[in-house]
Image (cartoon, rainbow, N blue to C red):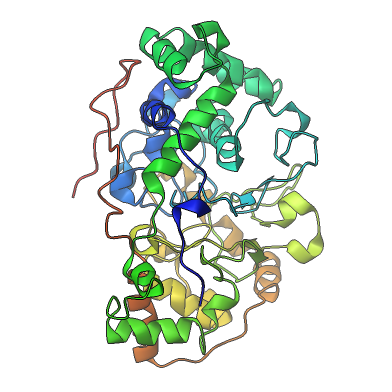
Amino acid sequence: MPRSLTTDDFIPVDLAQAKLGQLLFYDRILSGNQNIACSTCHHPDLGTADGLSLGIGEGGVGLGPERTPGTGDDRIRKRIPRNAPGLWNLGARDLSVMFHDGRLMAQDTYENGFNTPAQEWLPDGLDNLLAAQAIFPLVAQFEMAGNPRENEVAGAVHNRIDYAWPILTDRVRHIPAYAKMFAQAFPHIQSASDITIADIANSLSAFMTHEWTSFDSPFDAYLAGDTRALTSQQQDGMALFYGKAGCATCHSGPLLSDHGFHAIGLPPFGPGRTRPFDPMVRDVGRMGKSDRLEDAYAFRTPMLRNVALTAPYGHNGAYPTLEGIVRHHLNPRSSFDAWTPKMAALVSVPWLEQADFMVRRDAREITRQRAAITLDPTPLQDTEVAAIVEFLGALTGETAMEGKLGIPANVPSGLPMDARPKR
């Protein structure tokens, strides 16, 4: 059993910076074509994710499962290769790795405190790992930057990644309300010209940490000594989780993750996140970052607070329910073989349908992925599976859906905000 989480486990937050980050998080000003915000794929009404297996980024219209892929020249060119993860507890001090493949790490590889896709061109002044993470979706072509020749941000990215961030920063500088708020929130900022992309990232980090730090679930109450906080079925599920089912082998510690990488054989589909010059439609996971064969098809162990709010599940959202992803863990090879495309929550995109499941027609690739699975079968009764699912539900924070700052009524840029998803 892990120890209880406390506020000391999380990065301290300046409230003025968090309020600034709240506006930036919901403002489309940070996207290349000014048509998508951070909140589009990480909306609180959708558990801080988007409710899709693979998201619809730049070029799409709408929010969550109702999002459409756009039309004409503005339509999407590719699905987002991986599932949009929830944002719960990303301000934890113990976090040292982010993204499904761990391509962002707290590591001094490039003498700037981080090992990131930007390498030595990462901006100075980033306060923490979450701040470093926040600036990468802004310059990702299919997420927020847009396509070459559509806008100056996308064009700059294709020259060198760090050429794009000053363009986005300059947009924010020229909005008087933002300039005033930055000067009030950061002592080193005296005028709009002092604002940097690091200040924007640090504000986003402060907001996400403040808004989505969550450890007030029934499970947390149980850890704190309230033995009545869990039902008998949830306690049975907890006993299985930390015992016979072996879940805590990887979902360990206070954050319920070992922060490691494991090949559990989630059924592949979608465009995948290929390595440079890889001619195949596939996702090799951690190996794409490490270039080590032993890391093939391994993905980061997710943290589990509020997991019941963040369906679908897996690095590609292969399973629509908690029961489905639990059963996959218990018998991954059988589940890998039995999976069908109808289980994927995908927005209809007729011009991408031929590519959506192309990898599944490559028998050799499917054989490689199946052979890489490291989990052995763990037979459980249906009642035991149901108990584990109930326990996972007990990881939902009592105030998780309430938010702290919430969704602003409008943003300083004056750009339209995402309409809230239908209930």
